[in-house]
Length: 185
Image 1 (cartoon, one colour):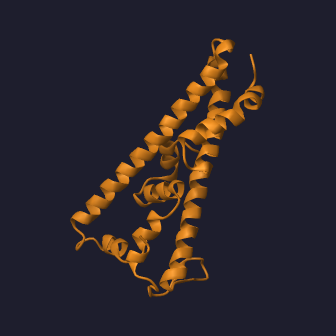
Image 2 (cartoon, helix red, strand yellow; image 1 turned 180 degrees about the vertical axis):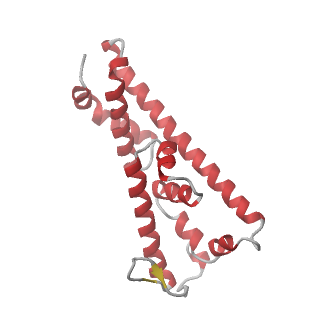
């Protein structure tokens, strides 16, 4: 039976092309490739017929890609439900008023998909470990994506809204937007 290294050498480049044909985000495709090979490595003892290794590798790949899209769909659904709940009573919900005010929604919406999903799930109160499990990725990956999303948002608020970074690295100042919100859309 071949080991994971041999499988990697044989299938990694064609598998990456396969993943890229199914997943538009290049970074997600690389993440999925790594995830697939972790599954291959941990499930190698389940391969019953060495002659069918290619079919087995692609089966794992298809299931992993399906899980990726299921996680994305669930995350999108939960975010839509959360926004709808906030919108039901906007006058009573100060958080919604701030979100609805000016740049927040356009800035979050323009985040790259993999960062936006993690950021939105975090805003909904999900723990990072739960997000990692839901998106079928590592906890360190979730932490990195969340940190990058926050950094991207900070840059947007600084460039558009007149904020600056305080000593603690958090945004400070009063909102004084240079552009109107509809320009972000």
